[in-house]
Length: 162
View 1: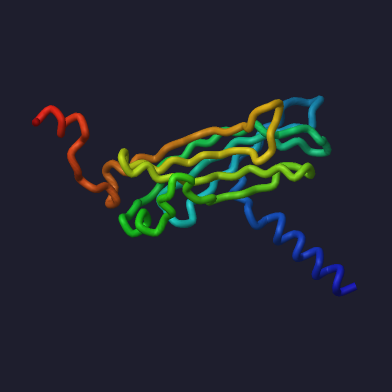
View 2 (view 1 turned 60 degrees about the vertical axis):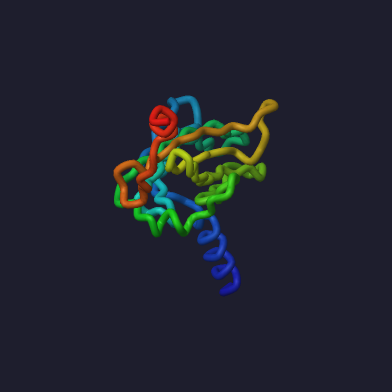
């Protein structure tokens, strides 16, 4: 009996591991089991950024909840040390993952650093193809007026002075 409780606790922790803070839930009507859920996630390496993700939650339904939207904003200080600690490769790094269905689909949020424009890009996407395309959404957080901003000439200013 104790092993069943232990397995139940492990399953519960696993299901909650990637969850953000559930900040809103809107029913899509009386005759549907679908809701729009809004989660808030804080970037684990850049805690001054919060992303809000809206997605469809289809309870008791094997529907394909691929559509999502993302909006990320600066909600606290962003420091140079935060930017120094992130992956700056072209593919960036995954900062959030959540299972979306029993059909092995998940929602991922990936942070990509645009060094030329000193901007953090947050790409949300579904890992399962739907109707011939992958669903995705993009949001950006400029580093302008943060401690992480590096003063350098704008490309248009550099060419006009020559």
